[in-house]
Image 1: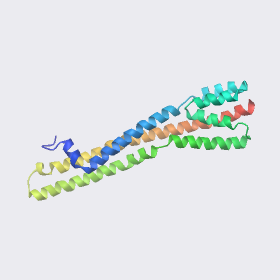
Image 2: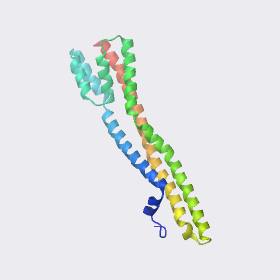
Image 3: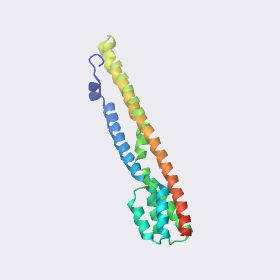
Image 4: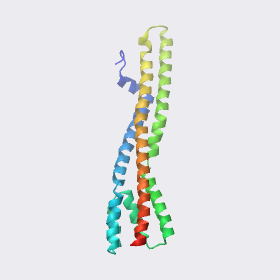
Length: 205
């Protein structure tokens, strides 16, 4: 409470805070969606390739493809695509695997732009609310013709809460965005390593 001004009352009267609340819900939604997507995309590339190599040595390429298709990891999808086109020349296979890696990387980075955008714009939205709150505070002071802190308390409170709200939305969004981008980069390296190793395995099977 700030005198007779509560955070709930500020939220009801500040359009800026309504926008920030929506941004916060949007950010949380995409955080959980990306967490689930990355959870499905992770996998042990060495274990997958070891099992695939064993099946290929037994001339059971169909079983190897089925095994990879059952996995949800990004590495398994790349390996499965490589097995599907294993009869093609080495150069063509290399290009096909490169396109598949790009496709999987695009899936990993889906919606990350939303988190990055929210992290960038939320402080500016909060700053806008701060400016509006200060303007209201001076307007109330002018209309009152004098007075003390009670006259401007509401406007100042709205300004400060808007600033805090913008940072509260932006900081987690930026942290999670950078975390997921790092995860996407790591998985991209895993896919590239798996692709190279698969080509060696296919060439020596």
